[in-house]
Structure formats: C-alpha cells, structure tokens
Image 1 (spheres, rainbow, N blue to C red):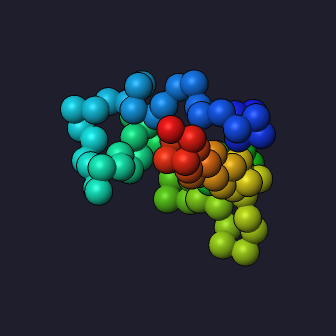
Image 2: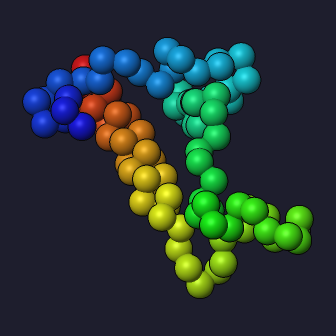
Length: 88
C-alpha cells in the first residue's frame, strides 16, 4: 500500500516466497502463488460445535468478520500485480 502511494514497485514479489515447484502458470501469472491457503471464512464462535458436520461452517445469512481481511489480501495481490506491471 505504501509503494502505491509513493509510486514505487513492491519490494518483495509473491513469487519470491512461493513454492514454485507446484505453481501452475496461466498467461505468465502465478495464480495463488502463496504456498498457504487464505484464512477460513468462519467466525470463532462457529469453530467448535457438538455436531462434527457443523464445525467450521459459517451460517449462510451471517457474513464472517474475516471476510473483509480476506478481500483486503486479494486486493493487495491485485495492487501488487498492477504495480509490478506499471512501474517497471
């Protein structure tokens, strides 16, 4: 975010710390280049449930508090790609 406000490219690229042996390239871009999954979109109070089938399931009518953070991560990935493309 700071690099975009100053007109500079990112100091660290996603590909530098990704597990590139398993990455699949699509048009030269590494989708999901992180070797970690995004956080689970489920609030803490829904993690433990007496019924094992209901664990880690967010109710469909209530958005998770983690959703905003997950969307922020995705936006920062897009911003990083844009900075890498434009600022070079």
